[in-house]
Amino acid sequence: MINKVLFIFVILIVLFLIFSILISILLTNKLMYPKVRDEKAVYDREVELKRFPVEFYKTLDKEEVMIESQYGYCLSCLVLNNELTKQPQNANKVAIFCHGYKCSKTAAVVYAKMLMDLGFTAVLYDHRNHGLSDKKFTSMGFYEKDDLKEVVEWCLKRYGNKIRIVLHGESMGATTVLNYLACDDRIAAVIEDCGYSSLPELIEHQMKKYFHLSYPLFRPMINAVMKLRAGFTLPEVSAMQGVVKSEIPILFIHGDCDDYVPYQMSVKMYEKKKGPKVLYLAKGAIHARSCVVDLQKYSNVVTQFIQQYYE
Image (cartoon, rainbow, N blue to C red; front, side, top):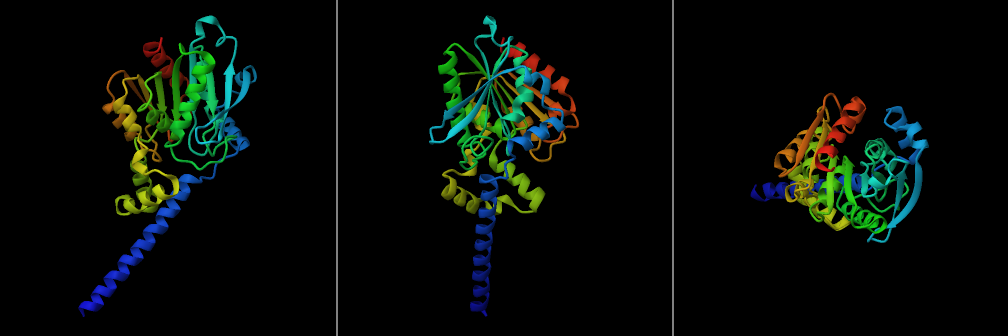
């Protein structure tokens, strides 16, 4: 009888391990190799949502640049200027934009316009495995923060050490920006839109919501598989780490109807942040739609933040 119970127990353990490995492989596949939208799909979506400033974009000076990552691949960048950004009093104003998961730099043009209206040269780029950048696997902010460092260094070399850089990130881009703050204090101000406070918290929320599975139950195997496949574990992607370490002014933006990345994550980061900070919760906005529900309000909040903490 004891041997039979032990045998059943061992079988259950083996089955659970197999199931855990399967879940971990499927999850890491989804994170590392998402179905990224092509440039036309991103553009069409932005126009349909009325996020893309078509006429404004036509008037801009556009420069395409390739920046090499420390990991050996190239990042596709776009530098945007107009008569306002070229004026002498705006020579030191540079804004870098980090787009979200499965999108491209085209999705950041709506935000670029807001800061270009304030005199900023806009530098937009595609994350690894997105847009026109090389197809290295996505890491949800881990290696992306190192790529952001290369873009920052390029800007400093191109425009000089006196420039004051603003970073804007949306979703995965927001987490990338905040994670980056843990290792660089040369940034003047940050705007984060609907970022996740940490990758484990995001995965726990989404596993429970969409698959009714417990992340803590599978956590050891997920992290082991991620470490083996990608070289890092989920806890190493932490926007909160950058938030608590940095004194740089941060504007936190989130839609209060976001159930993909819960808005409570931005609220929690705002509460933990020391030093200058602003929180804007867009009423009725789902994930990455805060500028869609009220573009003018969004732009006003950004303008007020820049005027208060940058200029």
